[in-house]
Amino acid sequence: MRRLLTVLSAAVLTVVSGAPVASAAGPEDITGALASIPGLTVVKEDAAPAGYRFFELAFTQPVDHRHSDGRTFQQRFTLLHRDFAAPTVAFTSGYNVSLSPNRSEPTRIVDGNQLSMEYRYFTPSRPGPENWARDLTIWQAAADEHDAVQAFKKIYPGKWLATGASKGGMTATYFRRFFPDDVDGTIPYVAPNDVIDPVDRYNRFLANVGDPACRASLKALQRDALKRRDELGALAADDAKRKGYTFTTVGSIDESLEIAVTDSYFAFWQYQSLSACASIPRAGAPAADVWAWFEQVESLNTYSDQELEAFVPYYYQAAAQLGSPEAYDSYLRDLLRYPGADVPQTFVPASVRIPRFDFLAMPDIDFWVRTQGRQLLFVYGSDDPWGAEPFELGFGSKDSYRYFVPGGNHGSTIAQLPPAQAAEATATIRRWAGLPASSARSLAAPAAPAAFPDFDANALLTDRPRL
Image 1 (tube, rainbow, N blue to C red):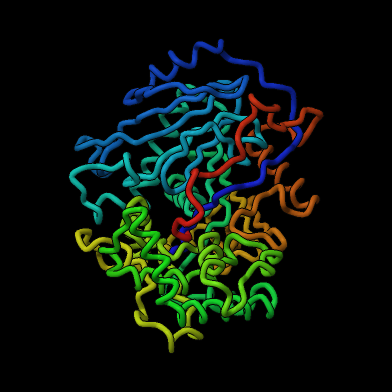
Image 2: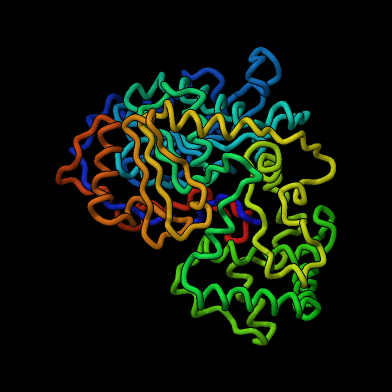
C-alpha cells in the first residue's frame, strides 16, 4: 500500500513578474527579526543562492492545541528569506521538511519567501510521550500551521499563500478549512479527496488509465512475478540481508513482496508516463531484469521495518482519518497468499493503537470546499491514480479553480498545463499575492553554482509510500 502521496520532483517554472520588491530592511535584519518571534529558535543558517538566506528553525508548539498551556514539542521548520515586503508561502509536504533551499512552484511564481513546515509526528517533530489518537489529527496539524503563520506574520506582513503537494496538498486544504482567514490563497497539488472511505473510484480509474496494451503488460508482469516469488524472493532476501532489513511489522519478507507486486500497478501510473510502457519486462524475462524494473517502480523490499519506520504517521492517519484506495488486485486473487493485507493498518506497528475510523473528517472537508471554499486552486494529473477522487468545487466555492495536466502524473505542475491555462493559473496566484499578472522580469533560477536545486517537495526516495 505504498501509495504515499509524495511528489518526488516537480518541474521548475519560469514566469515573469514585476520589478523586485524594495527591501523593507537590510539583509542582516532577518536574524534580529527571527529572534523577536516567541518560541522560535534558529538552529543554523545554511548556504543559499544569491539574494536569499536559508535557516533551519525549531518552533515551540503545544502538543494538544486544545490545551495550549500544557506540554509542548519542537517542530522543525525551514525559512527561505528573500525580502520582508515580498509575499510569503507556507509550504508543507505533509511529511518531513526538506533541509535544502528549494522553492515550491507558487514561491517561484510570486518570487517570495517560503516557510516550510514538518508535519507533526514525523521525526524529529514528534511529541513525547506519544498519544497518537489525541495528538495526530488533521485539526492538530492545521493548528500547528495556524500558530506558525500567525507568528511569522509579525515579520512578514504582506500577502500569504499556502501550498503543498500530495499529502501536503491535502494538509494545505485542511489548514484553510479550519483557519480560512490565515492566508490569501491556497494552491494544493495532486491532493486526493477520499470523502467516503469504503466508496472508491480508484479501481475504475485504474481499469481504464493509459492504453489497453500497457495495462495488459503490467498485469502480465505482476502475475509472472507472483508465480516466480521463490526466484524473486531469493533476490529480495539477498538485498534485505545486505541492507539489514527486517519485516516484523508486515509479518514476513514474502508478504512484503506480495504487497509490493500488487501495488506496482498503481505505482507505475502514479509516477511513470505512457512512454515508460515500453520498458515493462515481458513475462519470463530474466529475474535480474524483473528485479531492476521493480526497483524503479515499487521495490520488492518496500515494506521492510526500516523503510516503513519514517512513514508510520502517514499510515496511521490513513487508517484513522484520511482513508485509502482499495487494493487493485482482482486479477491476482488466485495467486495471493495474503488477501486483504494491502491496507494501512498492515503498516502500523502493533504498539500503536489505531482508533475507530473517523467517517466524518473527510466529508466535513469536502462539504466546506464545495460550500465555503474560496481562493483555492487545485492542480491534478489526468493519468495520476490519486486524481481519481479529486476535490470538487461547488456552488459555494468562490474565486476557486481546478486544472488537470493532460497525461500528467503525480508530479503535475502548473508549468505542465496547456499554455493558456498555465498563464491563467499563474495570473490568479499573482493576483492573490497582490502582484501584477506579468511583466518583463524572469523568475528563472540563477545559473549554477548559485542556482536552486530542482524542487523535490520533500527529498523523499522513490520507493516511499504512495501518499
